[in-house]
Length: 126
Image (cartoon, rainbow, N blue to C red):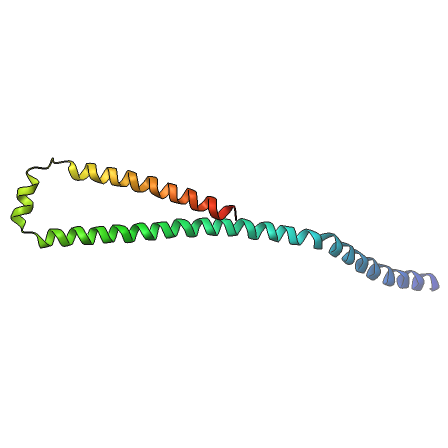
């Protein structure tokens, strides 16, 4: 009887002390690793969010620019007499609008990539 009580008493003290010390050891081991990990995660997502915000801002600016050009061109066409527009079309090639559209699209695309590249370089290296 005495041996069994001694073993259960010893085990009753041994395991709580073991887990208390193990908990302290794990906390001391993991705590220095947590701060650099979260710092890396926040820096990474900060850069990703900045990049996405820049791309969204450029897209919004291009949509506003396109709406302004559309409004100006639509206003000019509505203000002119239809006969003058028909007469002026005789002197233009039939694929002129497609060519101008392609040139403008290519130029805007190169500007978008240039802006995105410059802005991301500026913000990523901060």
